[in-house]
Length: 188
Image 1: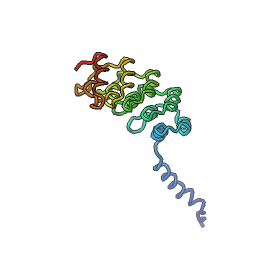
Image 2 (image 1 turned 135 degrees about the vertical axis):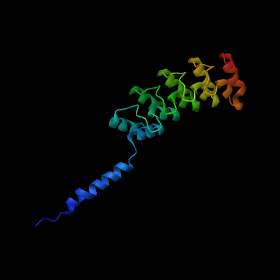
Image 3 (image 1 turned 45 degrees about the horizontal axis):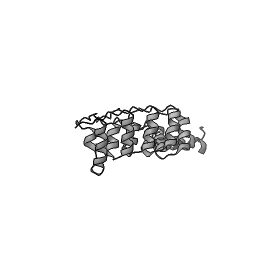
Image 4 (image 1 turned 90 degrees about the vertical axis):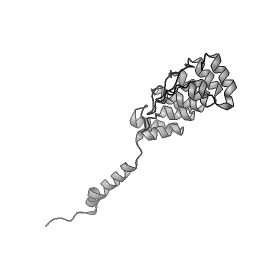
């Protein structure tokens, strides 16, 4: 005569594994959660997640790192925390974007300055050949453009289409930014 399985045995054999699979399949990868925490400026959650992975440069499926997300949103306190933990200031996303490019695209002067002070490569190029200066100019960020030029940005760098920062000046800032670029040695 065989013993009938108990309710506890059924739970352990069938129900618990199903619950575990359901939980794991619904969990967002740790890297994505870290990037999202940085994107939201959630330093406390980021610290907890970093303690779980110990990889400050963990990237999501797009290649975005927590530092890129924090730079994109201008969260300097999160950026400083990540940099102190060893974040790679020159890491590139799947499209070749760096944290500096994300910050320049937003025209955030203080974020760009923080990244430059941390050793960001001012002349790094994305996969399309764009530079932080091109992004800053395109966004119409006069102060950020000046800061990048002062830091040594190549005013005549060309993207894969042969365009320079000078060809990306928005109409709303044409006179002011064109003057700055030409004074810095820009050529057509």
